[in-house]
Length: 267
Image (cartoon, rainbow, N blue to C red):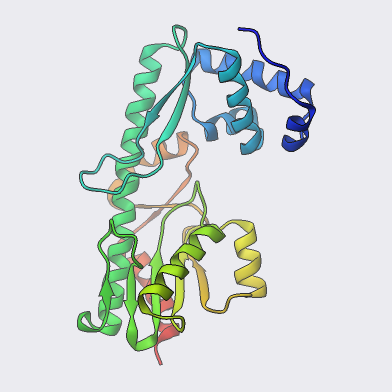
């Protein structure tokens, strides 16, 4: 398929020369012939930034009619919120169907296990808040709700926990949670977030300058890795192979870490 010439400005936006982009696209096509890949795998395999991987995939799809995308949901739990799906790229007629099916099965398993770990993390937070403040004095949202996880009027604070690592907590996440808290409970309430990882700009702003003192953030004790509960220890190699390094944790370990954070807000 003949391709339209790319504008020079497009390469400047991606900070990559036309020559380098050409090499990346060619290497990417060869990879996809052997195995279907999603964007973060492309970045890891080619050792390139995620934005360049995304751009190369767009160019590849534009130039090759047989480069297709298959969406794979990140979790299959009945009644759960739909997380962003994996966009699995492959070369139609060349990528082995067995490789596509295996990747889909592995990603589906990762989604289900990841969902269960996310639910368990929220359960840890809820249990810790009940012990510290009493069930009658807190508001707990449903897992699939967009409302704040746990709100404690007695200390005018909302507590949030998330296990996201491949897509670390960013400023948009914090601002959305902050706006919802202000709308539902008032401007004076404090937002307290616990997560394995944050984007660098978030860490600089909230660990360092603290421009918005109504938001406090803390790291979960997993060294920035995804918290994989011990009941799922058999899946750690699958997570690692998928480029999602994990830290095995027990419910007790996470409960202790969360409880230490809660103690900072008890008068």
